[in-house]
Figure: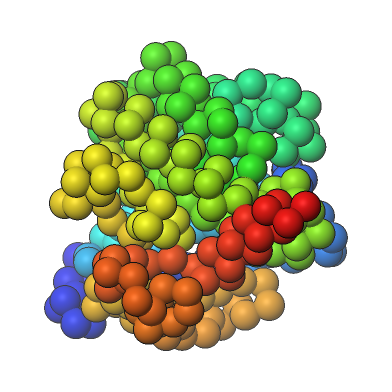
Length: 321
């Protein structure tokens, strides 16, 4: 019988299982193409499950790099599901493009699958990933995730993510239409800011939108999601970019993706360099910090200041250019 946690005893284990990836995204947060491959051994993950006595009410997140290329992923998912914890897989879905492979990875019982999409055309998406054919493979993977849920009831949640990358932003509404018209209705779309990685820093002018660009396309995407009656979630997108109609429509449904520690979880992070895990602390709110200190939305807003600072800097550069 799985362990039943009290609310104040819950843990969230976040694993970057590998630093390798089958894509080479120009905005890569892990800079995975620039390093020698390292994986967390499967036995180390299983040992962490045992050490933290993972059970009902706990969370397990599996990411990378690209976690589907980790040789022990199916075993890790099964062990997590068997414990009773909620297991989330973050993936580009390319390795799920064959139905039999998707079945092997997505063992019955997985809670959430989260997949980013980087364009509605191969010209945009594949330029972002530097892998020809990657859009078609990702769409095939998403199609298989929907098919598996119809067949088994799992994953419980299908989550798609749109990153606020300057060349992708104009395609956000068309990406939403592409998915809903051709594949299915996901449980939610995340509209997400960027992690300011070394890759992003090297290509600021190409990748970072101005505040006006961010405002325009975020609002367009939110209106399109409302038309489709699909839930939206903002991650590291400042609420001040929302037009009045979107603020009013989303005041009860926008979640700014608060860290698990804010919800009563202990958060433990693992990657190949920290295979034993390190405990994360509650992130600070933007409230009281520049340039958000006097904003009336600051107490509700959960925005990564490095991304917002880059957006403001890009805005300033383009005004003076």
